[in-house]
Image 1 (cartoon, rainbow, N blue to C red):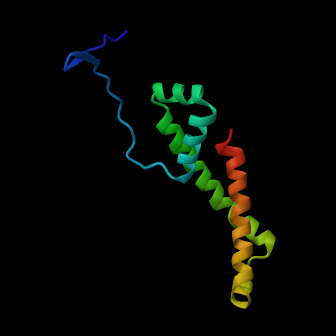
Image 2: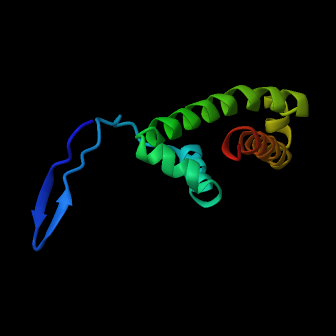
Image 3: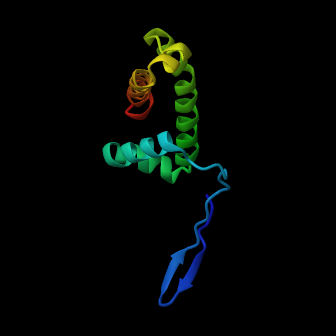
Length: 117
């Protein structure tokens, strides 16, 4: 077991804790959503990840997987809904509505399968 070192701060001694090297890649939208969910609804699991320094890698992995799922599902849903370039040229507002609907469906799948689990 590693012995703790302390630093004097005024009249107090504070443990000299350091974090291991963390990746420089920023956490994206879905990683932040996962963090908020864990903090509010699963505080014990959140604390466990935080104390073992596994929170940041977990959030990065969640964000990467969610973005990958978004990129794979959007074209399939758009094709199934009939969102084509021909429709975009003919009726742009209808195309935007259908595309937004596909994006909302994809985000619901991501939230259900990755974020809120």
